Length: 202
Image (cartoon, rainbow, N blue to C red; front, side):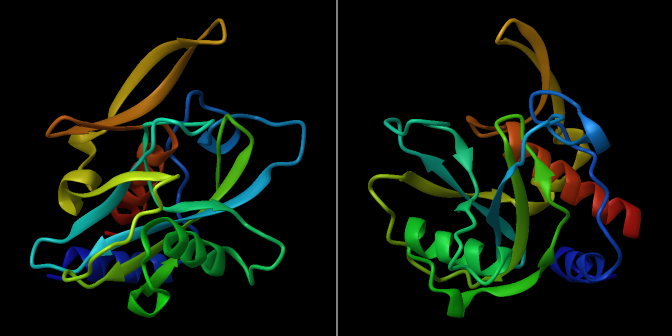
């Protein structure tokens, strides 16, 4: 039986991944929202820590940021004109935010882009990193980093659909809770999509 990392490697090498998550609201193709204006291209690195029981590396954003302050997120951001593409952007952002040298990342593949309700089209880049790395956090952007067990993150039993009132409307979003941490919105939806891809391939 293949390991979880091997299953991800094989799944990401196959045809497109299903988009099944929700970020605040379900829109076209199950993504975050419908948009009449062009979306801002962005990329995030989904770093999987290589262990007997793999972990998922996540960051907590600092409390003073203008958007998504204090939220749990993957390292990432906008794709710059100087980036060679989503992979290059995700690796650059991870280096800037947590000091992760791209040389330590084995890129497994790229999931389908995910549209957020805040106007971004996010390309998730899945990669494996060694377990013995230390990180240098950007004091402006990242308050801390932590690991979430990968098996827990991808288990559909831990994907909870919630509702909240936002801008006068009830919105739906996914949430994953583990040891006092709350992963929700686009970050949780990306994990739901990754879980769906694994289920579709097996």
